[in-house]
Length: 199
Image 1 (cartoon, helix red, strand yellow):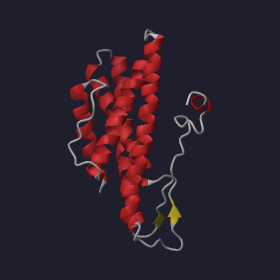
Image 2 (image 1 turned 90 degrees about the horizontal axis):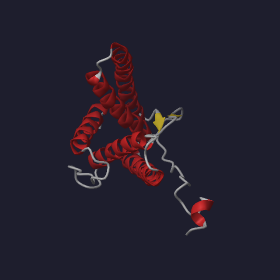
Image 3 (image 1 turned 120 degrees about the horizontal axis):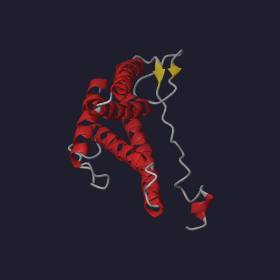
């Protein structure tokens, strides 16, 4: 798997999501369940939903009851996002587990899937910034959004390269692959006292 292939799946997901344009329409994943392509598509779909929910909930005219519903949905997306990232990491962990790390191998500051998580969100940022550039009628907004888009596109190039370099270092034994669960506590009644008292 290369960053080019990953970005292509993210673009496919973004296009499919925005054809629907409804945060409550279930995912229509074109890939077989459980494989890496399917997980990447699902990951980006979740990010698209959460992005839209985060925008909606910031509308000061949203009725409080509806705002709470959106907040719960955001929490659910966050949990799904984390779970999906961990599933992606597990796929990579299985793929690379036969590789013996060199004695001086380094540990990366984030796992492959968490780097890919950032790439997913970056693709969505670019989608919205391109849209803003296309819609801008005011020169100030056009300049601001065009400048931001340029930075985002460079970030995508750099992050894509960094992910490819990470994979290359893992395959050469120069980088140690470890997976860590995020131990999210806010949705778990065993750890969140406010959930526990209602469970």
